[in-house]
Image (tube, rainbow, N blue to C red; front, side, top):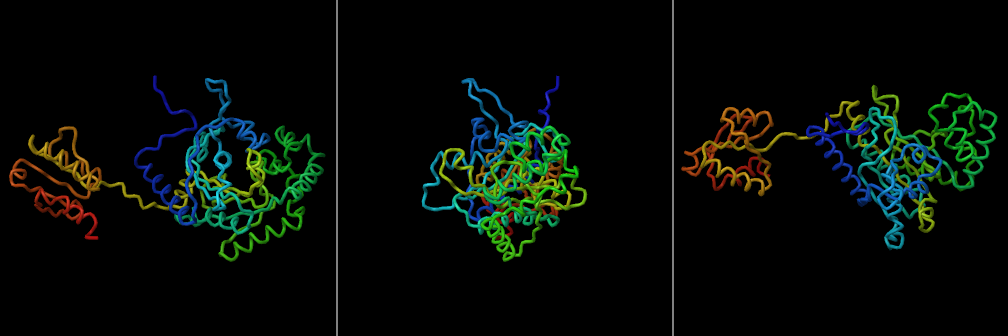
Length: 426
C-alpha cells in the first residue's frame, strides 16, 4: 500500500526548495531594512484564541480550522493565520510595557485551513506576515503598505496593484452596519445560508461572499465611505497622502472588506494583474485593528499588519516569467582513484567543507568516467582528481569544468587555491 501526502499538502523538493530559501531570505532582509524583527509562535494554540481573535462569524472559525482535543481534554487548533498568535505573545510577554514602541514583528511559517485544495491554496500553506503594534499613526499604515508592495516588487513582479479602503472606526462601522442590514434584509431569503447568518452577526462580511457576489443587491449596497465620521475620513486621507508622498499607486475600492472580524480603518489587498495567473487574483491582504489586543487580555492597543501566501507569491513569479537568481550548482566534486587516495579524499573533503567550500564526492564506487559524469550532472564548477601517483607527489589535479583548463596544485595549498578560484580573488 502506497502512503501519499495528505490532500492539500505538498513536498517541496530540492530544485524547488532553493527558490523558497531565496524568497524567504529576501523577505527577511526587507524586514530588516524596515526594522521589523522576527517572532516565532507555536504551530498550535488554544482554540479560544482564534474564536476570540479571528471571530466566531468568520469562515475560518466556522468551517476551516483543524481543531482537536489533546490528551488532557483541552481543545487546541493548528494555527489558521498568524496575527492572533502574535498578539497573544505580545500580551502574554507584556511587550506592550517595553519602552521602545511601536513593536514591529515579522513571521514566516506553516498555517492550516481545511478548505478545498486548488492551485495556490493548500490546506497547509506557508504564510509571511508582519504586525506593527502600539501606534495609531496613519504613517505606520503607509509604512506597512509600502513594505507589502515592495515584498513583491523587489522580487521582480511588475503586474501588481494595491487596492485600498477604509472600514472606519467603531462609530462609523456601526452606522454602516445598520445601513447594510436595512439594505439586505428585504433580500434575506435570496441570499445564501451563510449570508443570512452573517447579516445578523457581521453584515459587512456579506459583501465578501463569493456565492452571492453577482446578486443585484451587492452592487447597490451602501458604501462604508459614505458613513465615515470626520475622524475616520481624516485618518484615511492622511494614509493616502503618505502613499502619495512615497509615490505609491493605489486604487480605492469601497467594497473591499477583509475576511476577519478585527479590522477597522485601513484595509487593503495586493492583487496580481499578470495574464494567466488565475481567477483568484489576491496575493495578500491586511489592515488595521484596535480591539484585538484587548480581546486576548491586553490593554487597548492599536495594530496593523498583513499576510501573504508564499505559494501564491511563487505562482505570481512564474506567471510573470521571473527567474530567481538561484544557483543550484555544486562548487567542487572530488574524484578518488585508489584505496590510499580514497582515505586522503575523505580528509580533504572534510577540510574543504570546514573552510566554507561546498563539496561532494562519489559514494557508490563508480569508475572515474562515471564520476566525471556525475559531477557534470550536479553542475560542479570544479572537479578535483586525486590518484595514488598524485598522492605520492603531494599534488591534486584541479579541472575547471567551464573552461576545461586543468592544473596541478599542491595538496597542502589546495584549500587556499580553491577559495581564490571560487571568489575570483575577492
